[in-house]
Length: 160
Image (cartoon, rainbow, N blue to C red):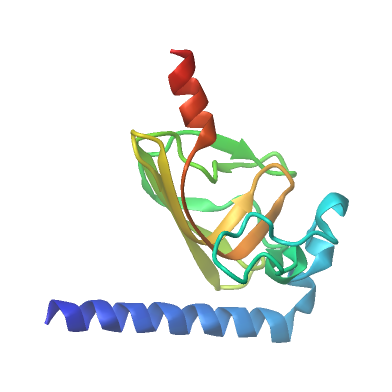
């Protein structure tokens, strides 16, 4: 019964994300692509992707210009980041021992949102999935999936 429930939730989530993606592409193509990126990333490929066969994907395929910043729905993360409009939202990478579930509105006045879940363990492992806000260059990456040990945390740990 529980397995069936999780399978249903998974299929509904994947279906919702596919519908939102298609709706965004068909109704407002300016939300996605090179125009969403800063100049230094427009011609780059995703060297940060670790799955085999994914390093050739250009940043422009996964870059989105949508409403900044995300809205944190649940979580214990306190670290904030500032958008270009001087609004604050949750930092995309939670500090160790915290997590967040956020919603990102596709376009002002549209009732469509993309989710974002991120957590960082106290030992420095970071996991994220869905639509990540880049608070430095002010664009979103969708889809985004990552699980890695944070180098910054390792350096802070060595300094102590």
